[in-house]
Length: 210
Image (cartoon, rainbow, N blue to C red; front, side, top):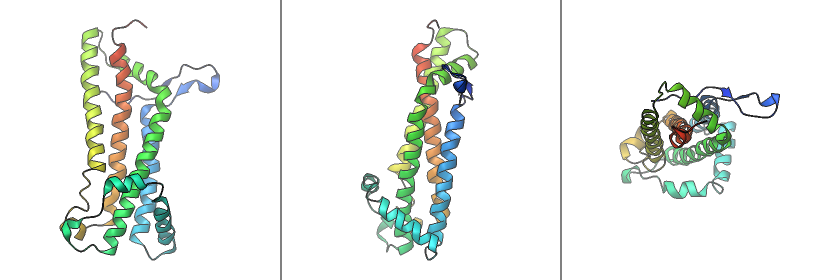
């Protein structure tokens, strides 16, 4: 399977635009932002009585109005019908907030990188090492399908199959650092979506003259 393209020359008009960032650079930027935000969230979750914890809790509650669709999709914390501890209720609210913010960051960077997709596509196409049109189309098509379904599966698990709060046992053993998987899965989704975007033009333009 192809890897994320690295930095490649950008077709631009001025010397300031001599090179384009690699796909991996943009995905990495999203990961850094999301994991840093995760650090703030779990620190506040683990220290609710501290000043910082109170500020973050207030911010999460205030942002809930803006992120209302995310909470609507998430439903409500279940815990398998068991009693819901205050920590679990707070962790659920923080978790939904974290997922929403992480996905917004990834989506903004993904859309902003659209102008580089053609350059990344050309790099992947050139790095494939194949010189037969049919083989190129087959490899690009199968790779595109694999990474696209990978992004969809991870996104489905992240949003609709969140099992951190689905049973009494999970709620009982819940720890703040368990929310680590949210930025991890978001980074995976972002990486797969970016690679799929780079492969899609290659699949359409394979075999065509430059």
